[in-house]
Image 1: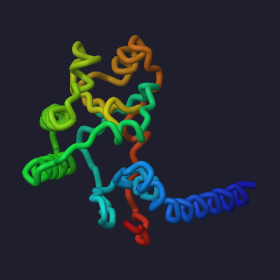
Image 2 (image 1 turned 90 degrees about the vertical axis):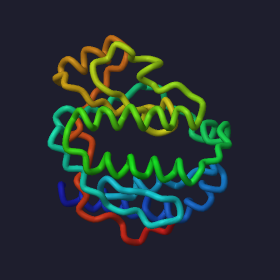
Image 3 (image 1 turned 90 degrees about the horizontal axis):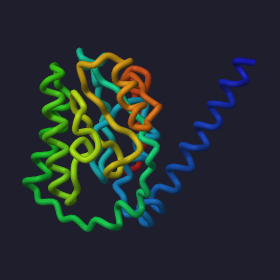
Image 4 (image 1 turned 60 degrees about the horizontal axis):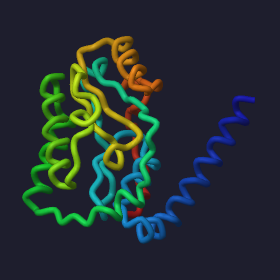
Length: 199
């Protein structure tokens, strides 16, 4: 039975992989997005992604992983609307600054530094798109740092805090967000990313 299930999983995965390859060009033309979501769906683990380039696998081996959580907000954003509303020109200087932040995120070894990176990154993006960082808007009393994932104000939040899991879960439950996950429950360790990705 388990062997049959594995075969079914493999077939579904192969089908979806082929479908994603075929539809990527269409989706990018319709939504005018970067293709990042599709690249993530096809990856075996965390990646660095630049539009038009092959994704680069990255190992996120944080010593403070027990202090990281992912929260499902239940507020799924309309990606097409989020992209179409913003017609933003990003300077090379801004791109470089955000890229440096991304590199620092990947190699960070201390929770306090990670929290500071979240705040800086959120502020940079907020200024760029004319929005308020999610923590300033909804979680001003939270002890830690919160980063919006996906479209701004998207359906998942990255949380970095010294609080224990129970405290984090209680806090967000009071905000109407019941689904809270530990970092290790959600983030894959990359063995190898799909080498055949077509940017």
